[in-house]
Length: 320
Image (cartoon, rainbow, N blue to C red; front, side, top):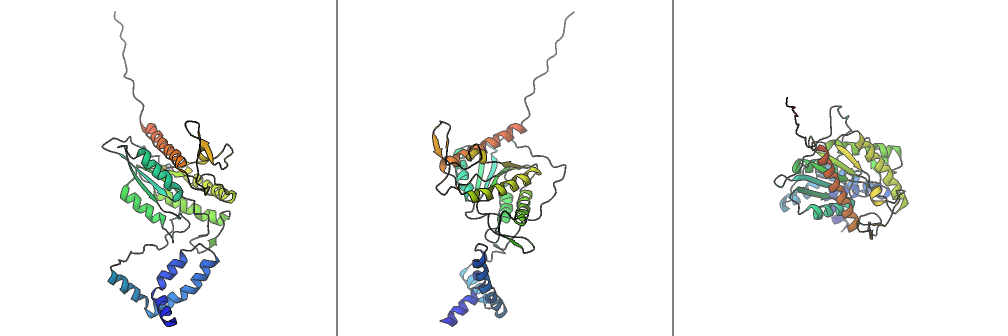
């Protein structure tokens, strides 16, 4: 039995290491990697891992070509001085505006609400892509930079709304291998800012406006404090990029002091719950409120890009 278990571990060594690497950074992940990395080394030396490859081939499972391999966003580039903010065109029934909404589970409900509010309109062609429990700190678990690059190429959106951060307040690994566990660590902030800037640069296109949606206040004070740090990084990175706009959601979901609130009046003056029971995600009324803000932002961009109507010149002549 022990021999069988040992052979099974060697055959599946790569999958066991991948599973260990997907764990949250910490002592548990480190212990798992200490255990499984030597097993993987033995499997590579003895070529027993080829048995798994053969089984996948016989079962018809295709090689994913490196899917799941950690990819860190490239270094932030300097924006050339000639870069200007793109002008958003007015959509038409036969030429809808291509809209993209992407991010973690906090954005999921707002994206669904946007689809409901604007779904019947022939003026919008909307793509929603969300991945639960993901963000920018763990590309080994889900590679958002690569996914966004693919989405931009596939859907060619003219407007993109992006939200991350709900799962990003955890340990982060810098390119040199250093691990920064705390959001308050300057090293963590520098590496996270580098990744945010890299994603913003990758989203740039000649005809694309991108809105980076900030995190709302959180019920748990520690989480809310970490969200403020991440929001400051988003805001700073967007300021130097003409195609980017940072959307501050604190006035939308917070009180007059920027603190967490459960309920706010709707358009009729009735108090409605804005957040789900976890104090993090948006309720249906809260998601709809954010979705309507996104629609207003699109309208504002179109209006700003539309030249004012010209008044025909008149010439007055005097007889005599």
